[in-house]
Image (cartoon, rainbow, N blue to C red):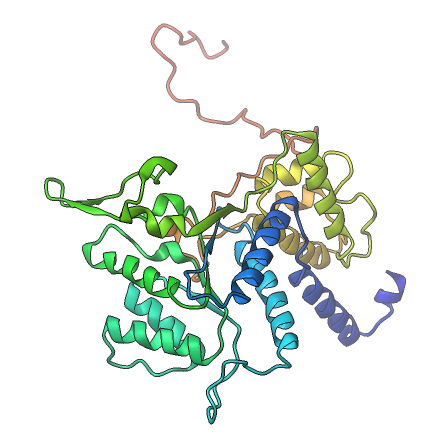
Length: 378
């Protein structure tokens, strides 16, 4: 701290900028939940990429609540696969058509538009490859997507926030046809979204003329036979990315280990071992975030900024009590699709941390009849 204070104002500002960049880019840590997702996804991507048979590839769905780290986990795994695939083929597309210069893109990541429909989803995929789609109909867009995926040697297509596609409208039933078209390609389709099982995205719907609404049956069971209405959902493996738990010894240990990993990357002068893991801090941080990774990162990042600005240079429950997590102003999230989780209220339980408010001068209203005192000196 003494060396820091001896720096010129400009050098202190540069040092603080470096610290802010560190806190804004906390590393992605593996958790027991993300490890389970990684095992299945790595196996599925590799197996499907090596298949030559003209059969439909089994696909993958990753679901969970908002801010659970679904996108980061899936992208990290897909990026590792892309590096390995490019090295295997010496950076060249093994299926390239002679005389063409299409970019070799083994992995494509596309975020479903907020106002999502099948046409806009196809357009978002074509935008990833820089393909023209002006004035195309849905069948033309679907064919263009198939062509782009094939010509660019694509092996993995990540469709994020897929539950923005609403299935309660009749015209959006075309989404099922869109999904089937993707599944017939030599590409592993990875759908990422909030509460995919409850969205009805991968189940056949029927229109109820009495209510004017679309009705979706429950997920098919093993006894459903060869009903074509179950073929789509059978081709997907569903994996849940859940938040941390704090009701078992294993859950508490995993949460504490995650906090210990975060501690090592915080650039605060008064930081110390156990700053996030000692005393009641693990309980406090879990109560503030509900075990959701994204909320924890937001709280830690904002807390570090506050610690630097105020000169506290460490994270405490008192300091974090002043940090409010507000997710309502994120334009990249669709609240109607469940992408914004409920943020736990600020509630401190450390004895003496906050003094009770003096209520002597509060107006409690007019006393009930019969309970009034007589006389001014009562």
